[in-house]
Amino acid sequence: MDATALAARLEEVAPGLQLEVVPSVDRHLTLVARPDEMPVLARALREVPDLAFTLLAELTAVDFWPREPRYEVVYLLVSLEHRRRLRVKVRLPGAEAHLATVSGIWPAANWLEREVWDLFGIAFDGHPDPRRLIMPEDWNGHPLRKDYPVQIVMKPKTFEPMQVTEEEFRASVARDRLVRS
Amino acid sequence: MTVNMGPQHPSTHGVLRLVLELDGETVLSASPTIGYLHTGIEKTAEQKKWSQVIPLVERMDYLSAQSNNLAFCLSVETLLGIDVPERVRWIRVLIAELQRINSHLVWLGTHGMEVGAVSVMLYCFRERELLLNINELLAGFRLFPSYIRVGGLREDLPRGFHDAVRAFLDRFPSKLDEYEDLLTKNEIYLKRTQGVGRISAEDAVAYSLVGPIARAAGVPYDVRRVFPYLGYETFEFDVPTQLAGDVYARYLVRVAEIRQSVRICRQALERIAATGPYAVNDPRITPPPKDRVYSEMEALIQHFLLYSQGFSVPAGEAYVPIEGPRGEQGFMVVSDGTNRPWRVKSRPPSLLACQALERMIVGGLIADVIAVIGSIDVVMGDVDR
Image (cartoon, rainbow over all chains, first blue to last red; front, side, top):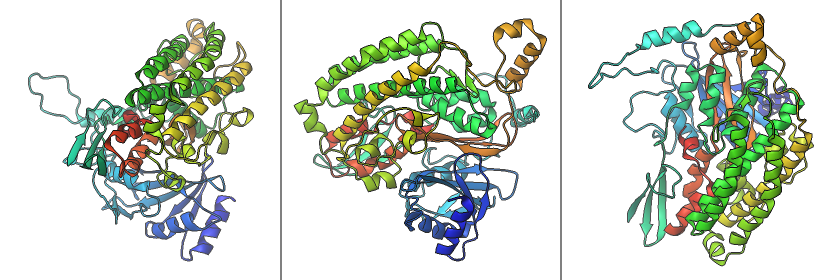
């Protein structure tokens, strides 16, 4: 079954879905879904016997700042029965990004969603335990966002070391980000 | 009573903190707290060039450095669209399997020690030393060799590599029998592990515990078999499974896996020619050999370009799963077409194992918590990254 057939099958099982098929370079079939259809899609993927994506291998996000829609939440799914791998992407806007939780469908998503909330600040509606996972609970900001500083300049206590400002550091990285053919 | 176990408890394999609610000796609830070892490797990786990420990812799961490295390189190579020579594939298979033996030996030793069999630890570390010596021979570094590179290997195999590996493979199976003599039918070990920390096949899949934990519960999923990479489909090996899903079943599965790894190593060693290509012949990715750098202008320029600017990877994303010592492992890499990664995300099997820990220990005894934490083989560097 290729990605187009899979999308057609999903649209047949759950009418109203509008899935976009995107090419991929690895062995995952790749679909892009709209944020509001994620709960329906997740349930269909998990429960329909000829799909049976019972294993959520990975759930993460990518920040494409300053592009809009800014975030992409990526679900990597495996069907153990049919030996198939699927990547589902959901694109979210930068302002108040939020998405329905899938932790009721794949329990493994619980901590993975907490990690995404912690590091990207994408809220998962209906999550049973919406706390930070890795960073301390009183931490400011979400570190894996692209607009989060890489080096935080703190006032030195006893001496004045050589400091690079955030702007200088970014400019240096941008200069170096050459495209070579 | 509420008990704080960790973050600095000798049996939590690093810095895992468990808040346990106890009634006498029975665990009523458990909530793991992680993050004490968070070093922001994924954020750091976004600032580095592609080849500079390799030492970073090796340090995530510090007991299986070369598996991380392999997973990362495979994903980047998929994005680049390159296919490594056959000889490189066999060498990578050999290294990955030696790494699995290495990791399982540390697991067996520490787990044995935690349930009271201290001598097992000494025996396991004795054999692990031989594997570390092989790493040293290979790359001059015992724990994090960075030998696997994008596009192939760092350099050709050292002289005497075949003999060193063969000597290890000849010696090792009888030593493994020794460990089994110490544990497999040991009355005390059986009492401490059988029926403890049980998890069903459905739960194992629901919590994404694919790997030895799921195979001990009867889920025959092994990435090497189901989604073969590096030509694993051409090797003869079995995927050991058990049905009980308890600590003892995990022990049996891992020991059987070590034996299968030895089997794969022997086959791979047969296939590796003494000399031959050790990387793809692509000047955009592979640095020229040192003798040419010293004698040819073009090679010198190439060398400088690769070590100052690095190579660019086409825009896109890739995730290639491999079977690491702790289960399915892989790196989701996203590129924006430049010489630095846009995002590097590891799939951490240990994180998911930690998540399911609560399910395995609630209702059991507090003394069994130690046995269960040992049996799921968490590496906190991999959990927190």
